[in-house]
Length: 73
Image: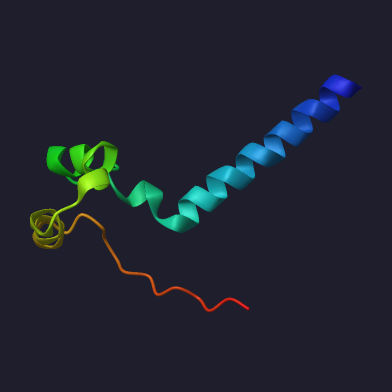
């Protein structure tokens, strides 16, 4: 009985994660990073970002659609 309950909970959890990923647009892209420069910057380069990095990210469109932050109370 405990195994069945555990499997049911696991199935609900995984289906919820899949639905959230589908709604976020994650599956619309063939990769997470735009190119190798974007990968390097995301892993290492963000620590010492320069104006050149900002310009490159803008011209190569690394960051996708801009999302306005919500106000918090």
